[in-house]
Structure formats: structure tokens, C-alpha cells
Length: 181
Image 1 (cartoon, rainbow, N blue to C red):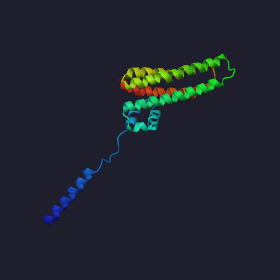
Image 2 (tube, one colour):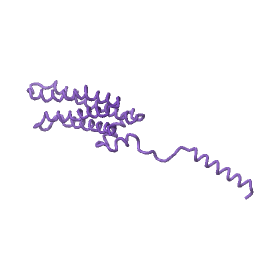
Image 3 (cartoon, one colour):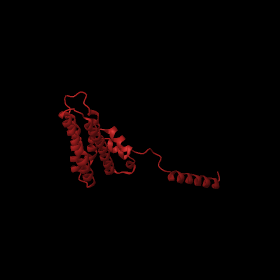
Image 4 (cartoon, rainbow, N blue to C red):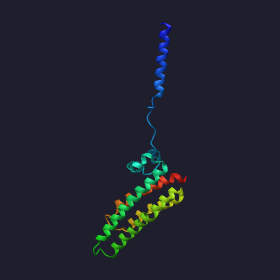
């Protein structure tokens, strides 16, 4: 091979190396921030699906994801409160016991929606993570208090809704707990 051919081969090799180095990294991406955050959560599947449902999660940092989780919990609490209110309004002659049971549940869910969840969000934004955690523990307790109102009834009329609120509130508490450590 003459010198021109050797020089040409080196030039082509140099160009191929430059092209290869300029290509974006095609290795598979690591786990998303959502997957990392939800990996140690007791409700991992719920955590991933809840956060992925919100379009804000695509551009959020961990604090933003925690806010999204509080928003999702607030939505679930309000749905349960609306349900309890509609049932309460339909009670016709159910007796004082029904009014007290549903009334207690509405009171507890109302406190969660109007006091504890807004406080948890404000505390999170203010980086007062222990207070936000305390607020979320109050929310986590609400479904149990409501469920206790119907002890002895079968089937319990609010069990599925209480479980849904409990799980998403507990999931959110787990997320906030990552800031407390």
C-alpha cells in the first residue's frame, strides 16, 4: 500500500472516530426519578402510577413529586367527602346512629381536606418536613376513624373508599418521610 492509501485510511478512521464520539449516548437510561422515589415506598405500584398520571411529574424534582402526591391525596379525600355528603343527605329516617356515623366521617374527612392537607403542602413548601409528616399522619388516621363508626355493620358501606384514601395518604407520608431522614 502506498503512502497516500495509508494516509487516506488513517483519515477515514479519524472521521469514523469523530462521528462515533459525536453520537448521543445510546445506552439505556437509568431509573426515572419517580421509580427511584417509589422504590422504597410501601405502595410502590400506587406511587408510580399516581405520580405518572400527573403531567407535572415529567419536569418535577423530588419536592415537586411530593407536592403532586399531596394533590392526589387531596383529590381522593375530597371524592370520599363528596360521597359521604351525598349519602348523608339521602338518609331518610335512618335514625340518629346513621347521622352520627356519617357525620363523624364527614367531620374527619373535612378536617383532612380543609386543614391537614393544606398544612402538609404549606409545610412541604416551607421545608418543614417533620410538620408535613405530622399533618400526613393525621390524614392517614382519618379512614380508620371513619371505619370504626361502622363497626358491627356488614358489609361496611365505606370500606373501599376508606382503603383508597388510607393507601394514598400513607404513600404520600412515605414520600415525605424521605425528606425527614
